[in-house]
Length: 390
Image (cartoon, rainbow, N blue to C red; front, side):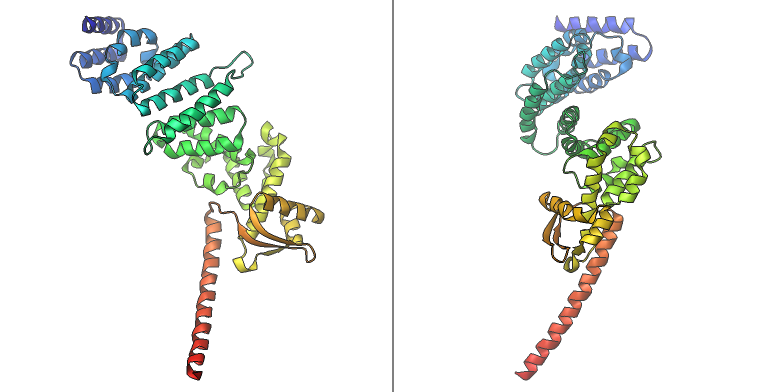
């Protein structure tokens, strides 16, 4: 009876469809009648994301009359991947009903940890796009709680699974919604670290690059710009209108205030950047101190107040406060000599370096090797004299 019901539904849809969509229905019918469950699963997963196919289908009816009849034969994770787009389609008319639908699917795949984690990720994504008349997400606290619980489910999985990318994506989306720039920056980099770049269009890559760039600049305690500058996603901005964003990131990475201010016509046209100009200026000054310290040999990391004032473009009497801020954020470690008006830096926070910074470090390593070889020669000579005397 179930087989006849499904075949009748598929035949009816095939006869009413035209062109390639009719062929899609025929292929579904063929796979189902031949009990090719794997092929049927793969095809169905592709079709529920195909706009031309979905446009002429009541997806709730599609599930009830077709998918539900063979869902127990499908791989649990693949079933969830099929049902999430179906729920998104249902949500267009009735969002509560779409969440009820996902809850029902959760009972079907309850014994599969990966599938359950993916399902919960889909529920989070659905709630994040649900906004009230004021454009606000009404249940942010519930979403936060569900992200935390799903995070534990994802962390319990072995290795990197198909769940990780969509989870990090919705987690980053939540952090963007609440205005947590630093949190979004970290989570978005995680997402891009596990997402297959082939799944992203050129436009999506550009959007991610822009959002990451703004998050890095506006994020509290984000001082490792080299990590983003070395990421392939940043290439999406080459030749685009947002090319200037890369230049700003390079200026921050080098602590280059003149270059940063020369680009103000670009970044100043964005409200968030313009509103946080003082924050950005203070941040790049901290980067300038780190760059001053990093550019010096380890044994000669004494920086005068005068040099700091010049590099950071601040009055002389504000140098000590700026250095104390860098120390409190653990960007550098060392001591301040108020009498001699010098800062002794013993450590600089590790970060990803760009090519010019790596070359500078290679030069310092070369100098260090020369010093070691010189010291080895002195020790060898002195030891020979001692042995001769004895």
